[in-house]
Length: 60
Image (tube, rainbow, N blue to C red; front, side, top):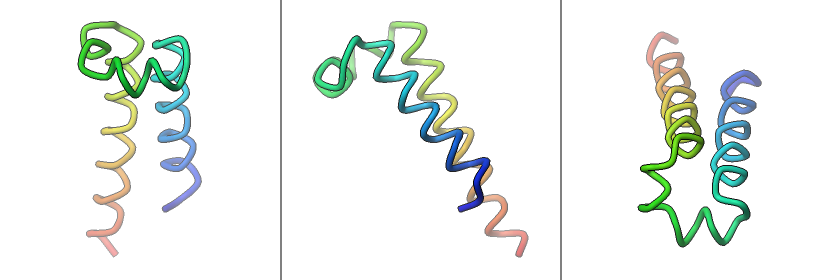
């Protein structure tokens, strides 16, 4: 995993946690959090980073 995708995933997780107001909120409120904008952005960032990561693997 290159540095860009690693930082994107970490940033996405941080956005998810901050969007929920804590780690427990992110864990237990995950389904509810889908309807909150910061959590959606965090999920999209993580998905984007994973897609970039797996696309880079296939090209090699």
